[in-house]
Image (cartoon, rainbow, N blue to C red; front, side, top):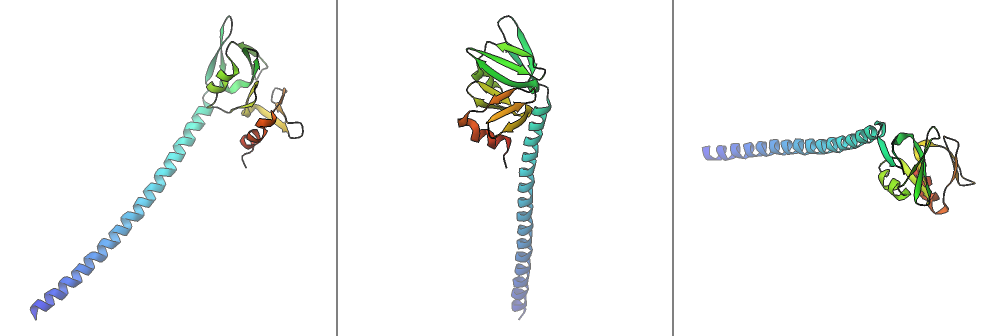
Length: 164
């Protein structure tokens, strides 16, 4: 009879052990899910912070001309306009700088910022757009210059300025 009691007691302790083990596994799984969610949120926040830092830093770009090199803050560039083998850079104060680089070079160098190529010859800073006329397909920039958006670029342009 004493053997029977021991087997019953062991059976009960195994059940109790398994119940506690299952409870611990559930807690660990819940914690793993929470940690995973927190890590994804942290990565998202870090990416957003890097974007904010990038947009707030007053970075400059070296613009090589025929006789000199100008250093222009990227956030002050309103747009770039191709002119044969040269590129005109128009800044906020309507200062024009002529570069010996092609507009493709500027498109590549400014791709990480808020610039968009609205036509073969125009690269605009989307932060300096004052308005867009849907009927005429033209952009009014903050410096009051009126620029045409190419028909082939219109859909992509609209998705960038109004992502909703």
